[in-house]
Length: 78
Image 1 (cartoon, rainbow, N blue to C red):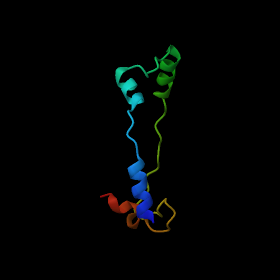
Image 2: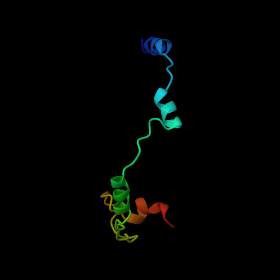
Image 3: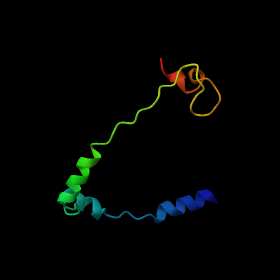
């Protein structure tokens, strides 16, 4: 029954032209940016880096499994 429905769906499928993709490639669908967008991009570049405390090999794994870090997620690090 499932094979019949899947086959029926594939047989009824129609191939359509992707007009939106063609518009993007020619530049018709692209919106010009304003000066406000340029200012917003500069403020996002000034974000502070995230500081993460390094987990010791014998400390509990931060994933909450209860295992030591070296036996859980620390296996990949050498």
